Length: 261
Image (cartoon, rainbow, N blue to C red):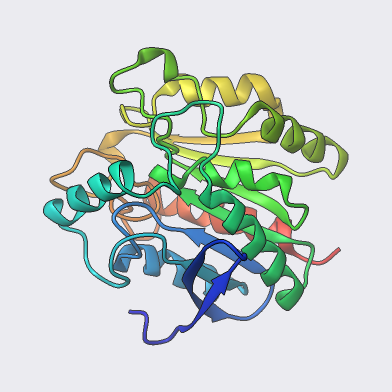
């Protein structure tokens, strides 16, 4: 599915990662969930391209294009949590080091693609990255799809936390008001990996600048995995389904925010 994409290596002077690119128009960075850039992440990216945007898919883990299996998913989770120092699955109120690289990528692609700014879509493990990236002025449209960090499975006090520092959140709040921007969040109501307290806390902090989309597990595409990945694994891609409407709203949010003034 990546044969229609070009690729390049991008370095911020500290880290180098491969990035896949397709499309024309303003830039949106789609930050894949675990285990990597699997075919359903590419499907979502293709829909963003069809809406008139340039998509950038950074490869942060896994094998690009490899389908999801449970062993593959678990293996990459272990590597990410236990080995890769660029990611932090446990700390609340703090972003992962890889976010610095993503901010640098956003600056670069905005220079190349123009427009009002850059969209950032984080998913699951990377969901909160889109909020933390708001300290980069080029980022103007953050989407948090089932943001799952910090993990609250063994620490219920973390259910209301997000992996962005108080300074990063304060910057986002100032920019939302000063630049008339907003943020979109998506989750399934029964999803324990992205607990309801997290969205409630974001709503309390950002008010109407945070638009939330919450879906029932019954709306998810049937899977052996519990309903979690709104835009990928559990998206029922048929027209008119609740998850398809959520995807359409996500793409419209990006297009409206990035459209030139």
